[in-house]
Image 1 (cartoon, one colour):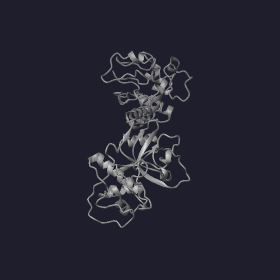
Image 2 (cartoon, one colour; image 1 turned 180 degrees about the horizontal axis):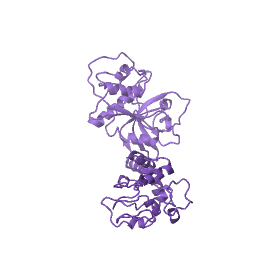
Image 3 (spheres, rainbow, N blue to C red; image 1 turned 90 degrees about the vertical axis):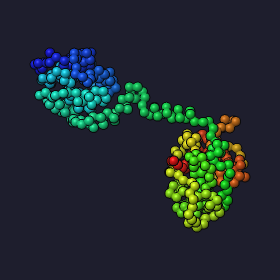
Image 4 (cartoon, rainbow, N blue to C red; image 1 turned 180 degrees about the vertical axis):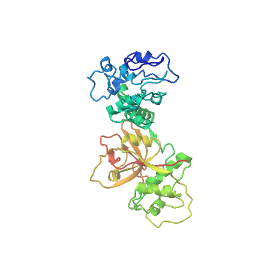
Length: 397
């Protein structure tokens, strides 16, 4: 019988050595729902309490691991004897679970354990104050207890098993990458029109690319092939600069708020004019637009789902007649050009490429289309394809 407990009722768990088997098998009869703390010692290595369950530590050895907060003689009978008279079947040491900062063990301080003491006998308050003096505070609420555990749960898992959420995310990314098709061509699939626009002497490449991307996303959602008005963007998207260039953000915001009419209703003039205020029939709509991270894998993932707009150094495109372009980014060049990535693939030599749709007519490149090398050594990509963020429209139906 532990000293200080004059009448110990049957069924109370005897904990002569908290880390010994007595802690597991000592309870002769427990009330329904009572949970024994079997895994405390097996968890000790995770939280740095390697010596907490050893006989020397249980007996109050003054040599304890640095930084570990514990109650002297916690494993001895004195800790149990702090409750002078406990009713039959009552859970012991409720106060230990209020000290969440001592150890980050999920199972030890679960709600069932924290609420396990059916009635607090006289003398329990003394033990609680003793704990408070040791660690300097009391984690009095469930929010304090489990806020601590949520914070330290991942390091515990990583130490114990060598895995974490980052590993699960990496595995999901690898599975998604393996599931991607090795070749994508939205022109062959009928999503992107093979007819190539010609912007002529108007710097409207931004409007050409936006209109083509909106046509594609509408086809993917409605299975209707439409040809939208580029001239409406040039004339009416007043935040941009018409034939002197534009920003995708303003262009997509205009389409989101106003939609686009058809090419036949508002034909292309290759010059900026006054916005025609007409009761137009909206054919092209979007719900929003999203940017893509500036790397090869992110763009490949996006293009596998739909065509994506990219910005490249246009100076290199002027002399292109076919093949795969692998020009390196040149900071001296200042002419940026918008094109639509309509797919990707690998040629017979094993060289990976992006397939792009330009807006310089059918006589340019490979029938108005071109190929740019992908997975080059420069993080900015061939032709500086990742200097500016790729972007694509979203349509929810």
